[in-house]
Length: 76
Image 1 (spheres, rainbow, N blue to C red):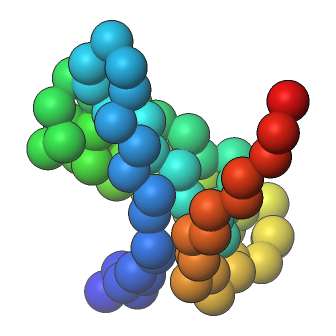
Image 2: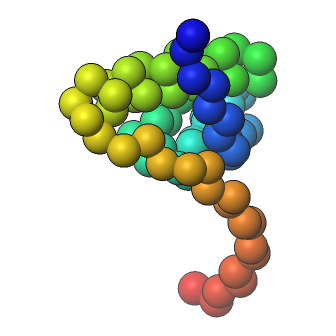
């Protein structure tokens, strides 16, 4: 039976439409899609690929990272 993993993702709406998905615990995962559902489905596929690669090469699979969002204001 395959192990299950759960990862927090950051879903970023893009100005021109669509979404980008980042996975803080797996920085090599960056995905996108035209809709939220498509972006998340693409992220799931990318996560599976990274987990498979890490498993096959004896690399650790990290625990989930809990992203925190903060706002920084700067004068430019």
